[in-house]
Image (cartoon, rainbow, N blue to C red; front, side):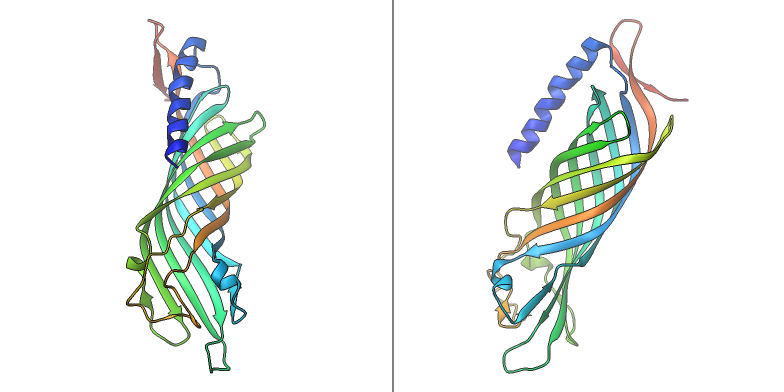
Length: 245
């Protein structure tokens, strides 16, 4: 993840001088946007997949809402920084030992997400993006059957990093306002579970202790943006930000 952040920083360092030399080739917008996403979330776990008594629901909902600040530097390449408040769920159905009835459970995760994405914007409203997502865990609740919720916030890592990639298009691309629809996926390659020595619950005979859970999410996104400024050349030849009136 450090390598990805370093690469993006290097690209920004190289791109800004190139823009200045070329006079800021259009488009070179600075955009603020509201963003929402809805889709699916999965905690991949091999130990759970191998257990015949546990059935994981791979269609568990996820929702995100937040904002984006985007800059297109030159040759339609830029950087977007996003902050999102997100909710993820992971639903399971399991049969405990010596019990015939199946029990439904749900692991609910609330996070704050910071995304730093390299973004390409094409001529016809097409865009593609890739970069890191830095997630801070705010709250994790586990509910099983009629039992009260277990607060597992302290049993998972406080933060973790994912790789994000996505693409989409703009059905409306006005002079100032742009509406974009897209598909985005995020995956963390390391487990987000910590040791839980005092937690007695779990999924059947699978307590959460030492389970390796790796989060994945895929969402459809709606982005409503406004171009509020652009890069331009001052009379002295230096680059400056020009705000639209």
